[in-house]
Structures are given as C-alpha cells and as structure tokens.
Image 1 (cartoon, rainbow, N blue to C red):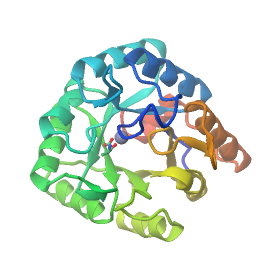
Image 2: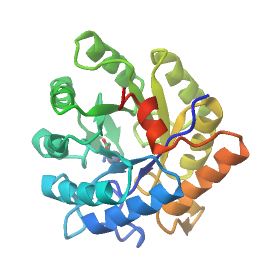
Image 3: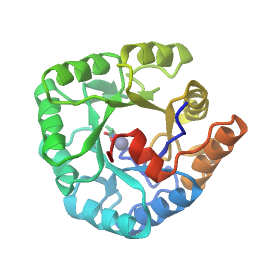
Image 4: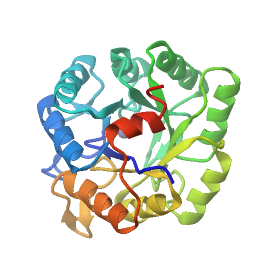
Amino acid sequence: MDKLMITAALVGAEVSPEDTPYLPLSPREIADEAQRVYEAGAAIVHLHMRDQAGNSSQNRTLFAEAISYIKAETDLIVQVSTGGAVGMTAKERLQPVTLSPEMASLSTGSVNFGVEVFSNPLPMVRAFAKACREYHVKPEIEVFDSGMVTTALSLVKEGLLTEPLHFNFVLGVPGGMAATAKNLLFLLDLIPVGSTWTVSAIGRHQLPMNTLGILLGGHVRTGLEDNIFYTKGVLAQGNVPLVKRLVNIAQELGRPLASVAEARVLLGLVH
Ligand code: KMH
Ligand code: ZN
C-alpha cells in the first residue's frame, strides 16, 4: 500500500458559524487552521473561503490571501474548491483556479444536495477541466454518484483530463451515494488501475468510511466541511482532533503517513 495522505477540508461552504464556533472564517483563521492540521499530519488542505459575514465566497482575493499565508508558513498541498456553494455561477466558482494552486476539486456531474441541486452540467465540467489544464492545476475528481466516474473517464477520452486520475468519493450526501462499504467497493471497481483515491463521508459516516479507506489502501479526507462532531453530540474542537484521530488509527493499523513531499509524488505533482 502507498503511504497515507490525509486531506483536511477546513471549512466548506454549507456549515454555518452557528452550527459550530470552531469554524475558521477569515483568510488568517483558515491559514492558522491549515498550519495546525499540517503539524498534526495532513498533507493537503481543501479550501473554501468565507466573506466577512461568514457566507461562502469564491472571491479570488480571499483565496490569494489565505494561500499566501499557507505557502509562507507550511509546505501543504493547496486544493481550492471549484464547487463553492450550491447556486453559485460557473464564473464565480472558477476564480481560485486562476491562482494556479497545485490542485482543485472538480465535480463531474450534478447531484441532489439535500433539498437543493449541486449543478454541474457537462459543458460546465468541460470548461472547468480546460481551466485546470490551462492553469496547470491537478483536478481531484469529486464523485457523489457513480455516473461521475463514467463522465471523468469520457473526459479522458476527450483529452480534457489526463491519467493517472485522482478521485475523491464523497459518500453520504443526502441525494448522493450512501456511505456504505458496498458502495465504496463498487466505486473502486470503476476507476482505472493506477488512479489514486480518497474517501470522504458526511457526518457520522466520516470516521467509519475513513477507517475503511485506510484499510483498503486509499487515502482519506476529514474536516469540518464534512462533519462537525467528534462523537455523537460532541463538537470537534476544530479540524485538528479529526486529523489526529486518523493519524492514530493509521498508526495502530500499521499504515505509515505520507510526508507532503511523498504526497506530491503520489499525486504526480512532481516528476
Ligand atoms: N459545497 C458543495 C456544494 C467542492 O468543494 O468541490 C460542493 C463542494 C465540492 O463542496
Ligand atoms: Zn468542498
């Protein structure tokens, strides 16, 4: 098995500061949280931004500020969100890609997202994949349902994505694929040999699916974007306790952690 890469999804778009007081909000707070998860063992940070009112924002300047702090203070791999929040326009969502971060998320299909729709029509997905190529950004393909793997493979045929692909299976979104072991195994059968993959899951599913990902030789994403609780009814006091718990589980299971330099090699970010 490869060494384990941990991604920390620090803030997300949907969690509200009223849900948890531990959400980092300003670029400075997000960068401070990035430094803490780096020290705890994360190799990648998945970034969303918030405006001064705490609402989700894809503003380029906010991303630029946070990324400049993170780069100055850590060696972390920065992965910006192109998902933003439900309802944002393609133009809004693409802004942080123009900063040429090392990675960006790329959702390859639409999905019901609770009572809303996270809309990713094919022409938009193609445009996002082209932008990633133009700005030399490695996409992480966000898979909420199995058709999104199929679409990613068709984008390889179209020349818009290049193998080896990196997938993130986001399980347990209400409207998307449920967070079950069977579903994860089914998805793993669909991806090309040589791909890397990580697993994220929402709420109480986060810990068991992350643990399964560690056991299966995949990689894991944790963080407040996906789950704000440490245990039932007990808030996680920031992203660090969630990262530290995975570091401990990996150690107990005999799976060594990838350094950030090793993660860059695993993801093909350096040659
Ligand atoms: N906020 C979700 C609608 C991504 O970052 O690319 C989309 C999302 C995925 O968070
Ligand atoms: Zn996200």
